[in-house]
Amino acid sequence: MDKSDRIVMAHGAGGYLMHRLIKEHILSILPRDNFEVGLHALDDSAVVNDVVFKSDSYTVKPLFFPGGDIGRLAVSGTVNDISVMGGKPIALSLALVLEEGFPIYDLDRIMQSIASTCREADVYVVTGDTKVVEKGSLDGCIINCSGIGVRSQYLDYNIDVVRRFRGGIEARWLLDSNIRPGDKIIVSGTIGDHGVAILSCREGYGFESSIKSDVRPLNRMIEKVLSVGGVVSMKDPTRGGLANLLNEWSEKSHVGILIKEEDIPIREGVRAACEMLGIDPLEIGNEGKVVLAVVAEMAEEILEVLRETDEGKDAAIIGEATDEFEGVAMETLIGGKRIIPPPLGDPVPRIC
Ligand code: MG
Image (cartoon, rainbow, N blue to C red; front, side, top):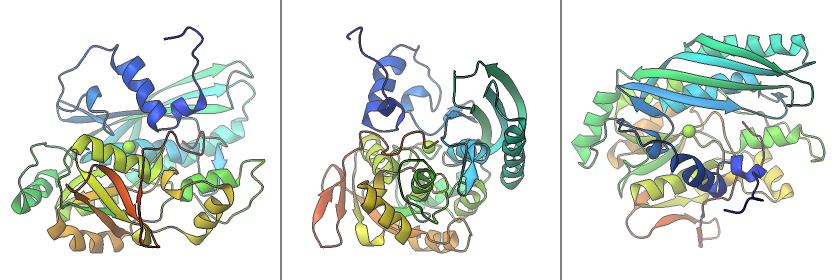
């Protein structure tokens, strides 16, 4: 370690550099816990005495963007990370850090948005904190939203269905390490919408688009899917996008993952914006999507149920886990195969 080493933006961008920072400078220093799903799992949430526990800070820039704002993002992000473990989110904490001079009118708008998203997700803010810092010390407002959830009433049934078709799922929760060769990979809708919506309203990017962020709580849709059964693992493709998610799954489950480019749902506007800016839609963060690994026998039924929901109407089966290779690969539109490496970081900074 060189004393001149400094934090760079990519350390917060959800890719390889962030994971290295966390492993080398945070994980290795904190005392090791023995909880069922503890810090070392680096999963979407921890599980402590059957309580699903998640903390997340929101630093999105700008605070208001097409399709949402930092308030809706904070509630949705925390709710979704609890839900993808197989938890039912119930209560949140809300910690606001405000910059001196921040318009109270904007605070009111953010709070209205938090309230309506809480109603949508059926969760309550039960504790919180408010701090103010001097003008210039931060960009308007940042939010920390932590949350707890209980075990979903459908999780035991869901895991029973998995076991009916194959063994090999010892975990009581939907962990990143649960996936086995043959499992199908489903994405709940179009990818890249959130990142492109954020970019489209930043100055200096010189493009306009009608793309709106997909930010929304997904717990109701997830409950519906668990009641069908057969879900092996779930994860939300936030920073680093689908590429980062699939690489985390591949590494933690020790499986290869093969996806098909033609089956990945991407809006035309997102594709066009990505081409113009030279960024990969697979590496951009999403805030209203979930990726599911499911037993092959249940894949079609789960897809059908997803498509009946508003949140999952564009869902698609995009690939499967395999033991034929390690890492993540994609069959391209022109028929070749391309390795999908873990991204260094999300190409769009301060996306969430
Ligand atoms: Mg997550």
